[in-house]
Image 1: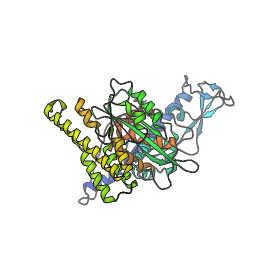
Image 2: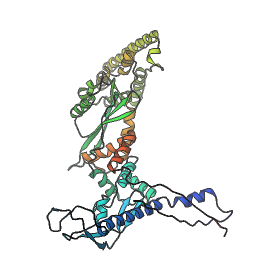
Image 3: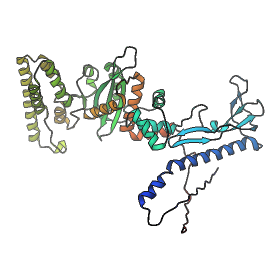
Length: 455
């Protein structure tokens, strides 16, 4: 069917007293209002067409419904009569405002059941008032900021008022099972691993850990391999290995912060395991603090460590770097390793046992990015700065005074944030599929006419 909608507007302009900003300001008022009015008119016309076919044509229209008093038995009668309309207009919350539509009833001539065909035809929940588009808007808004700010932003953008608890229920109440994570056919060259803590929503409180694994392809594309709340690294390792085992070659590098359990559970998914340099410097200072070392000395030794492990690789393609230059890098690498071991010996002699132990645990993989480059020419991440950024963003959305989370709830929120931020094209396809966008309705602007007269 075709529907034509005419829109008429009256514009009053004071000659000599208007500027472009005022015109744009006035025009902007009608953005969401026009969307709302057009959508309401389309639904009303479509409802009339459906009911007319059900009640006014000889062939009728079969709308399956449960027989009156039939206990789930389906009636397939195709003859109906009009049965008036609901006394109040039905509210439907969209991402650009609330639609108000009068819903009409029909009555089955055979079993006497009264129902509303338009809600079935348009797949509108009998009791729910939100659209999938509004849920998408809420999900996209919370991927950028906290719930509290998101609710305010939605009201500013679309005029839709959604209580914070309602927005939370919409997000956490969904299973999001079709929002896929993982490699999904991409060849992963580097893997980054990290995590952060959160307050668990359990009796007596307690701390949980939300953990992420991010894959990076040779082209720099990011893939979220997984998000897990309060799950052991051993179980996480099994899932990641199962995904990566399907690709042709192992990733070149695994970069992590050195947390206990990562090396044992994930160390063999890549050819090299790199200790995050940012974490190395930060955590050495903490270990020395536990040894009782004064701040001035701690800062001095961390700066010395930074000089040892901060070795830079040459720019340009690996194959164009001269062999004598590569040999020079090998010598510098050996020198850096010697300096690293000297620092360990110095700490042992001074009795800085925790600092010495920390450095010993990282000596085998703090220069892995250099060794990988010398072997095959792959430049991999030396730090988990990407994941550090993710953790800060996650904290903005999940951490505040008094905030507690269920394991499933925080997993869903973080999954949405990562998917929307780092896999935006997949995010768009997910919503097209979820909303059933299949070219069933197309709106084309035919023309805009205007006339003006002096006042």
